[in-house]
Image 1 (cartoon, one colour):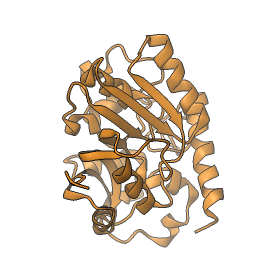
Image 2 (cartoon, one colour):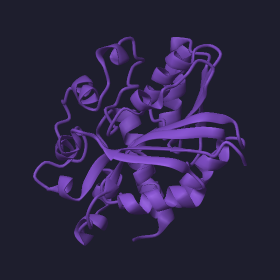
Image 3 (cartoon, one colour):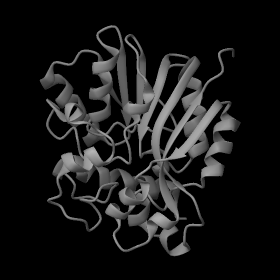
Image 4 (cartoon, helix red, strand yellow):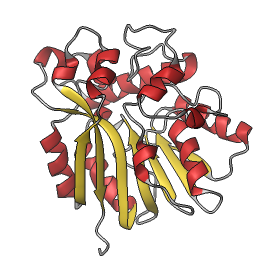
Length: 266
């Protein structure tokens, strides 16, 4: 594909537009890339596995409907956990996580888009949240210390990373021994057509950058992860169809739940 830095800038520019104007960029949402801009974001969130309670009292624009699942639902967060969200966007999953970890826990959101970080910080400050922090950075180079995180969550972001092995290596580095990842993401289940792979809108729309499920599993193993579990969401085809109707993308990519653990001993 094209130069990696140019691709990163394209992705960053699209998601900065989403932060500034709502779903007007090209992203993982039925309101993007030619979809209906007036789509019901709450309805979209519910289709991804969020409850009515999750959506209550959420800061403005935190819920952008950009995900492909609900990583919080599978993360089994505990009071006192330190949680890291890879690609935190407007802060939606971070704000849900902070409820579960309580005042003794802490949530860190990392995003490479300055406009998203600004929006998330604004939401956190205006809501008076003290146990959440947002950091600007790339998920291939996490601004997080070694062995400090209990659980890593991520929602449809790793597929956008151009160096996925580095992402998993970094995730392993920052997790405490016994820590784990609980993420929702798009993976390839068949060969992605070259016309799709080379389409920038398909890349920023969470399709062209998807790696095959077996490749992702091997990357996790190479990073050192154990107890790897990868399963498709029950309504995966419906989720993908809503992003790019009539393109048959659901025949070669799927929304997956991905879980893995760092060994208890170094």
